[in-house]
Amino acid sequence: MELVHFSMFKPHRFRGAGISKFIYGLSSAQAALGYSVTIAYLSEKDDFEVPPGVKVKRYRPHPLRFFLPRQFCKDAEVGLAKMDFGHLHCGYLPEMWAAARFIKNRAIPYTVTPHAVLSPMVMAKSHRLRKVVFRHLFQLPLLNSAAFIHALSSGERKDVMKYGTTARIKMIPQGFDISEIPESLDRSWIDLHYPLSRQTFKLVFMGRIDPVHKGLDLLVDALAQIKTSFPEIAFSLFLIGSNYEGGQQNIEQQIARYGVSDQVLLTGSIHGVEKYHALASADLFVHPSRWEGMPFSLIEAFACGVPCLVTPGSNAAGLVARYDAGFVAEPTVDSIKGRLIQAIRTDPSALRIKGRNAKRLAQTEFSWETTASLLCAQYEQELKRRGKAV
Image (cartoon, rainbow, N blue to C red; front, side, top):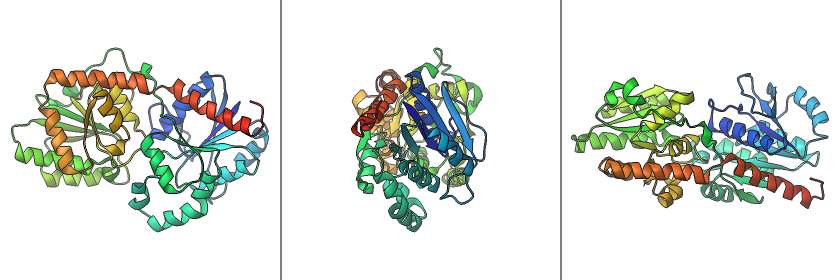
C-alpha cells in the first residue's frame, strides 16, 4: 500500500511541535510494517529529519494559501497514480484543505488527524469569527469528505463530534518508542545544572511556553498561593520549552508579579538524552493543560517513571487515575493548588510507586507499532469497501 502524509509540520524525532514527532513516529512505524510511505511537507525551512524507510518531499508553500505549490501538483500527478491513501495532519490550515480537495478529486480516500485543534477552547481562543467562517466553508467539507477522522483520545473524539462532522471517528492513541529512554537515567541532573532546586520539591513542565493553552498561568498562581500560605514548603518549578507567540514574556511577568521568581525558572528547550535526564529529575511532572491531543512530553514523563499531575484537558486523566500514576486536578487554581500540596506531602516511597506505575502505563498504552497497525487496518478496510485491491 502506498501512503502519503500531508503536513505543514516538519517530521522530526526530537525538535518541533508534537505533530512533528507524531508524523515521524507514525510514518517510520508504518514503513517498518512494510508499507510504502511518503511525507509531503509544505514549509519554507529545510530542517526536517527523514524517518527510516520513509521518503520526504518538501515544497515551498504557494503564496496564496488556498492553492498548492506548482511543483507539488506536478509531482503528485505522477505519484498519485500509485497512491492508495492520504493522511492529513491539520487544523485551520488552507493548505490542507487544498490538499484534501486535490486528492478527493482523484477519488483517493484520506483520513484527518486534527491534533486537538477542533477543541472548543481553540475555537474561542482567537480570531473566532474567522474560524467560524473557515469552519463552514472549508473545515467541515474537508472533514466530512474523509474516510474517517482519527482522534488521539476519547476527549478529542468528543471534541470532533461536537464540531459537527458527519464522518466516522476512530479513536486510536498515538505511539511512543520506549527504547528512546536511556537505560540509566541521571535523576540528579537538575540539581547539578540548576542549584536552586536543591533541597526542594522539584516540579517540571515540558512543552511550549503558552500559558493559556498549557495552563501555566493557573500553575504559577497556585504556587504563589502555596508560598504565601505554606512558607515551610520548599518547591522549585522548571518550565522547559520554547517561547510561543509571546507566552514566555507573559509568564515571566506573572512570575515577577506573584513574587515567585526565586522558585520558578524558565530554562529554554532541552533536547536529546538530556531531556530525559531532566524529566527523570522531577519529583512531579506537571501538565495542567486546558486542552490537548495527547502531549508527547507527558508520555515521555510516564516512560521516565515520574508521577504526573494532569488535568482532564491533557486527555490522560483517566489513564493516570486507572494506573495510580499521579494526581488529577481540575483546570482551576484551587484544584491545582490542592493537588500540589497533596503531592508534596505524599511520602517519597508512595511517590516512587506512582512513578513505577507511570512507567508501566507508558509501556502498556503507547506503542508506535500498535498505532500504525490499527491505522493501516482502517486504511485497508476503507479500500476494500471501495472495491480496491490492498
